[in-house]
Image (cartoon, rainbow, N blue to C red; front, side, top):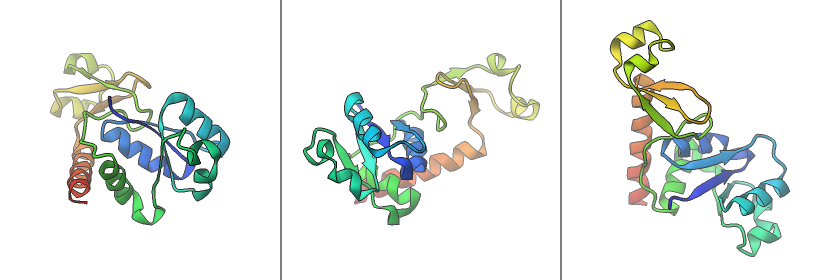
Length: 159
């Protein structure tokens, strides 16, 4: 079973990239540290944080809540490499970077009513997020994301 994560307020960008890498990564802006620790523990998620104070909280300190300190000095791609390496994680099929929902493949006909006409003329396969309903496709942005993920996975293995 793949690990599931809960990122603290400083790691919202990391949560998005973990989702792109195929992992369930929760994130809530402005969540109180005590609530964050409690929710991570209740849901069985691994708490990812750059806040040293979180690691002084009893459930984290005693190991009742699995956690990993993610150094902020690494930058976003470095954070992703760090987490992939710490847990020896391979890339999985991507999830929605916005909400973390699973992506369901659609045909061109199923996406016709929503896809921009220019995109519809070039793309054959579309995806719908089962969480937020967002329509996605493999455009130039997707290629850039795939490159960043591949580089992070390779660097994590070398670590």
